[in-house]
Length: 170
Ligand SMILES: [Zn+2]
Image (cartoon, rainbow, N blue to C red; front, side, top):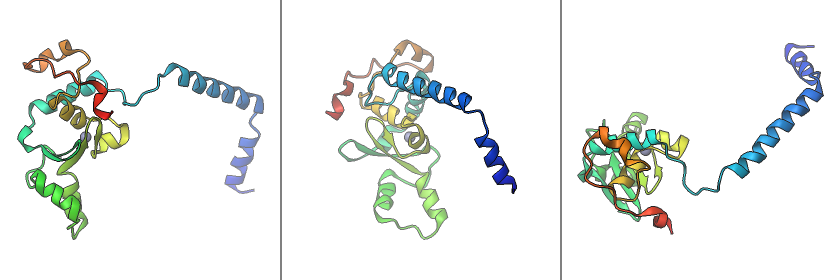
């Protein structure tokens, strides 16, 4: 019997009572989780992400935000020196890249943010939350910081963001 076959057999020889107990525990935990976690249409935003978003927004050149349509905006990334938001959008629509390097340069030069929570950055694609989307939402008064007192160390705030709540999507 080859190595892999041997491993396979070994796995099948694991005592099934133990396997069944583990499965029962797993299923019980999953079932409870669906009851404990309330239904949500928004991903949870941690205080840490709020802080990152606030800090990012504070240093961000707001005049570089380009309104595309509806709740979609183009924002240049902070490391980008070559692209304006409108050029970035133009290339998003026309696919002019001849090499992967050109494409890659464009990809990381800007982000498409659709309020309140979507963004084309890697962090958002993985976690559904990022400082850009939260930051731009803050900028437009669509995001209410969970605990404004925690932000005092991050600089002077000019009042609380306007109250908007989740009405945006309705
Ligand atoms: Zn992002």
